[in-house]
Length: 257
Ligand SMILES: [Zn+2]
Image (tube, rainbow, N blue to C red; front, side, top):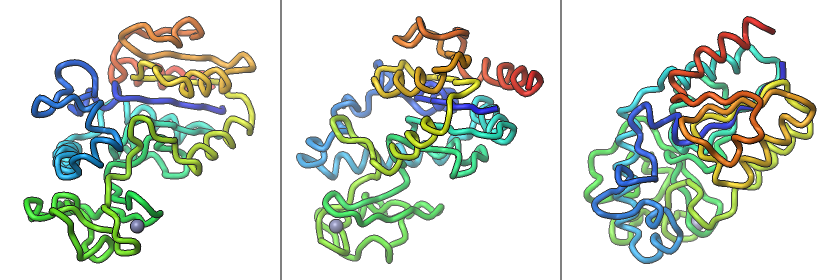
């Protein structure tokens, strides 16, 4: 069985990670869609880092839900499998998806990288307590980031520019190496099943990948409480939250193949 799974914020929402949409997504009266931009970081990096710090904290406290677990089961069952998630949290990883079977197309919130060069630092598990002094460094290994700061934001040890969260902001390009992994998987053959879960499919590339994955008559299963631009192409529509629907869908797929 060859399977492609595309996930979005709806999958993490059920673990208590707020989405960017609607009033619930607001943080201190700020619209996250306006904070998650290169312009906001250029204007007020301290503010943007504080927001990301709080998100990191919240994600650390959250746990993978039944949707994450179902996708992991499918990943272990299918011969060929790729999960492409738009989520920057680590819940799929903590649910046990092998790294080589997952692409985080919008980046990883637990990476801190340079805003100018390629320098990046993975974060260790322990959250640092001195956030007040160094918000950008929260959770990072100090030696891998920098000993220098500008207004509390760590500076790159290679080029001295400000460090930033390792996520893709609105208006930015998708990371080419991750894009290449998705393209390679799609070029490797059509899928028997494509599942699109918890995403409103507002980005054209999500629709494109779902359609290319199911191009040779494969099943295209959409799991989302509301209609999306992808709905009219789906062979199966499940209007339920992912954590309710996915365990059943995965059970059926594993039993049938
Ligand atoms: Zn740098």
